[in-house]
Length: 171
Image (cartoon, rainbow, N blue to C red):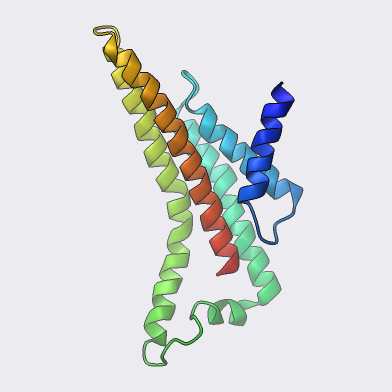
């Protein structure tokens, strides 16, 4: 039964991660990130510093690996040329290049901070609301709904990480 559930997760990863990334290791790491995002919803597993270190150790090297592979395949001149889309007027090209360069520099920060902040707030908020369940019974129903909402948020953030990494490879 556990093998079937892992197979469902693996099929989800294979459907979402598309493009020229048929490598087993890349998909395996993204499956690990997905499992980490989902396991953070289990009580007593979440730790703020551990989650931050996990993101820095697993997600940031993925971005760096894509950057290095893109630079080695295309070279610096083609990489810089891809920062300006086709059909851009010449007079605005320097500004577009600057904007795209800043966007490329901000991507790893977004990859690290966005899931960290949102999933941390969800975990801490659930903990605080869980303390109220000792006082009233209807809070337990709200916590049940909040749990499934947080699982959905974890899946969305995993999809955002995959999309940003995919966009980083293509642009």
